[in-house]
Image (tube, rainbow, N blue to C red):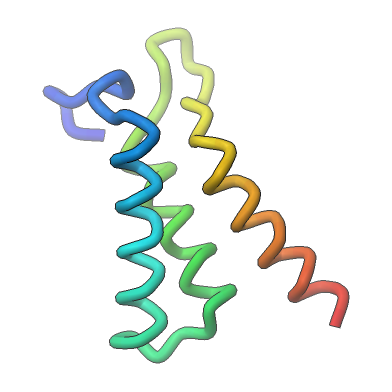
Length: 78
């Protein structure tokens, strides 16, 4: 996280939009599978939002966590 950016600077709608946009770019322009693109997008967001001052991870919106969870479950139940 940039030194002048805090977790509270990101609202859920902004994070969801960024997640979906990055996943789409990685899938279509980067040639990744949808699952890999969603996981990579999630990892980027985790780095972006960082941690609270207490050291606890910032919780990403449930909509993003559901998409990633469904992708992982689908991948491992093939």
